[in-house]
Each structure stands twice: as C-alpha cells, then as structure tokens.
Image 1 (cartoon, rainbow, N blue to C red):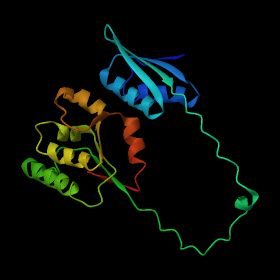
Image 2 (cartoon, rainbow, N blue to C red):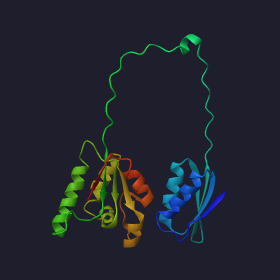
Image 3 (cartoon, rainbow, N blue to C red):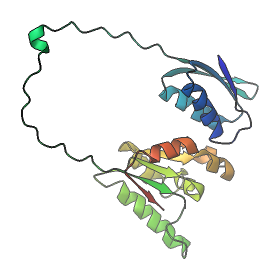
Image 4 (cartoon, rainbow, N blue to C red):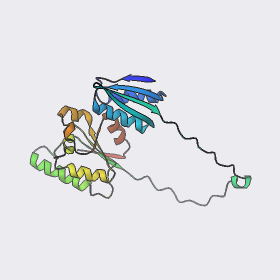
Length: 211
C-alpha cells in the first residue's frame, strides 16, 4: 500500500500527490490529512477513479484508505459466422454535425462591477438568475476569491446557484478561499473543491466566461 503524508499541505497538493500515485499504478493508497476540506477533495478524486474509499478520524488525523475496485469480467461475445463477419457495403452518410460548443463560468468577485457595491450586488444576482434560465446551461460555475461568498446560505444569489445545480450544472467552491474567509460552515450550496478539480473541470468547456 502506498502511503501519502499530505498533512500540512495546501490545496490542491493533497489531490495532486494522490493523483501522482494513482497515475503510477498504485491500486491501494493511504492518505494522511489534517484538513476536512482536503480529505473531502481527495475522497471524491479517488472515488472518481474507481476506488473504494474509507475515511477514519484518528484524534484529528484524517486517514483515507482506498483500494481499486475489481472490474467485472466481461463475457466474451459468441463468434459470428463467416457470412456475418463479411463487411457490408456502406451507404452514403451525411457529414457528422460539428460538436456543440459548451461554456463554463469563473466568478472571482461578489459584486458585478466595482463603482457601486449595491448596484453590483443587484447585477450579480440578475446575472446568475438569468444564467439559471438559459436553455443551454453552463457545464460548471466555479467560485473563487470573493466569489465564494455567493454560495453563502444567506446570500441573495444562493437560490440561483441552487437552481443551476438542479439543472445539472456543477457548482465548485474554492476550498482555499473558503478557509481564508472562515466560512466553511456557512456555505449553502455547491461543492467545496480545489484548484486541480476546478481547472480540470473548466478545461472541459469550449469557452470560459470570467467575471
């Protein structure tokens, strides 16, 4: 079993250290952590890679034990007769449709604009409300820096973010920013995430809108 000591490591290093071991072929890993946010991020990463995960709290030290799940043996399909294996003449095909463009949104501020805070709050609420009504919703909304405060349960924008989640939009809240502002207990929606996951998710979109 590969042991990774990620205690005292800042986001996203616990995830990147774990990823490095997985990429090297480790099928059993033990990750030592001292931060609940980092533990949650590492756990979700391992589960996304097909690991069975157990989390234990040992007097403040969080220990994640993970093992790669065994894939079910696929039943081989019966061999086809020679006639069935012969290539069939292909009919004319229409050209493939171009891939649909997608977008994600990166928000690093609490208010839209700098000159008037009250106006900026109204505009940001209006922006997220309109975004939640679009037929083509974004793949993800990532909140960083002051933007994480939009996810507070008493924020005027929290309900709009919840509506986006109901439409399948991934709302990612920067864990480092949440820790900096000491607001982890006040987050009312979204997933507290890390820089690695946020960048990986944003990179999947064709376009990134930044506020």
